[in-house]
Amino acid sequence: MKISTVQSSATSAFKAISEIALRLDVERNGRPDFLALHFGVGSSANQLRAEAMAQFETAALHGGSSCLGIMTHEGVNIASGAGVGAFAIWDDEGSFGTGSADLGADAFDSAQRATAAALAAAGRPGEIPDLVWLTVAPGREEQVLDGIRAVIGHETPIVGGSAADNDVSGSWVQFGPLDNHSDGVVVSVLFPSTSISSAYQSGYAPTGDSGFVTRVDGRRLFEIDGQPAATVYHGWTQGAVPVATTVPEAILSSATLWPLGRVSRQIASVPFHLLAHPSVANPDGSLDLFADVELGDQLWQMQGSADSLVARAGRVARQARDDLSVPMAGALVV
Image (cartoon, rainbow, N blue to C red; front, side, top):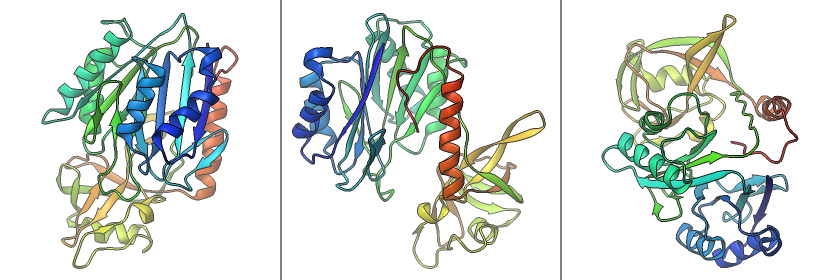
């Protein structure tokens, strides 16, 4: 197996993909067996996919937009807003495939279809992959995960995340080898010929403040302990996150270090929290979240810092590397 990561700052899709192909040394290495492209929304996803398919002709092409840009071992690439990063795998003895679908009215079913298409593209229908790489439009991630699990079971790690844009305006994009999507799911199944390792840490700790969900509708949280959720949250964050007055207010940036958490499990009496990041504060006192919460859930105020998140990134990378039984060829990081 060979893995290579490269990036381009070109604002033209043709130039970006041509530079990536040159830097991946496709003439010498051949076309990758798997290629993930992630990029800032300043790049045209339609053109990126078309150029990538023309130059790489792979059935395992996975694309998704991110906030501002991307980062590789070469550094952060956000200056142009159109930075493109590529993660390429060559593995003659492995199998790789990508499928995608519009989420439509039934995200669960769409995720099932995308997963089945990915397995078919890999030539491994009915088999269980070693890893799933996922990109999905924000809004229905829980249903998508359930749909993937319905096909592959609960043992395979699913990594990746939600596509993003720069301002939560909905301009995020996802694509597979066949289609582009604005509200879709892209699933890649990986059957590498060597072992893999994964690790996860959140970088946040509970502050001690907590309350129970007393009114909620999907991802709109109206009340905590019978009080307006935005007011309670404003107090828990010590005023760091504002409340809305006459119009909805985007709070994702100010809320980045202050997610809400629910205890998902305990290991050796240590609670592990599943995070829900608030995105919008509404004038009626409700909060829009990036995760589903249920009536009666206990929510804990979590807090992180720039230093804790940076340090945690290093620790989780080290843990994944140390758990690997073979020399490391490369890494995908969210």
